[in-house]
Image (cartoon, rainbow, N blue to C red; front, side, top):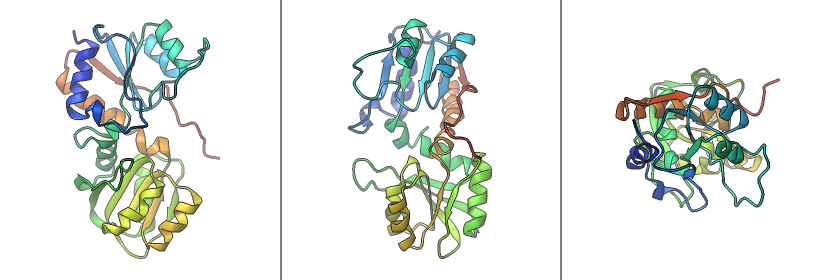
Length: 255
């Protein structure tokens, strides 16, 4: 039976924890490395609902993308996820920016594959906090067609489109909150840029470039990692059950 340290090492070999960005808090945040793993539940965020789900399926390790402990904790209530994890004997292994960056089993690679892109590759980083990947569509699309393609592939309830000046073939992407990096995608010859969040002033800057921009939601652009990572881990720890959370959902609803 695999131990938490074994799962940690598998992830670390493909998405080194020491590659995380300076602001991040990735790693084993709750639990003991030597603990034997019963089942693993993979999710984007560790919430009360996800912890209950883990308990119901006898999972004693949760792998999440977003750290369950991010800022220093000054107090804990009985309803805080970190408290509930410790009380229920469930460990938390959080893989945030190290998984954003990873070209092996990372979030952006998972997103690009979900869109059916080919020639997927990491792009030169323009600063420590910039993660860009690119890929190509099999066939060029009109901006509106590309937006609908993204919406369907991500099962997004709604998205925002900034139509560009031409057809879309080469796509740049940054899962989650990456609105500020659209100009870099244009500088490197992108036809379209996909991200989860984009502020108003970032959209105005992006519009100047003539780039097609699609904003599909933070949750929608990152949740795709779970099935991708689960498949990767199953091949390397076949005796361990890796399950994708069905209890978590986007914080926003579409009305």
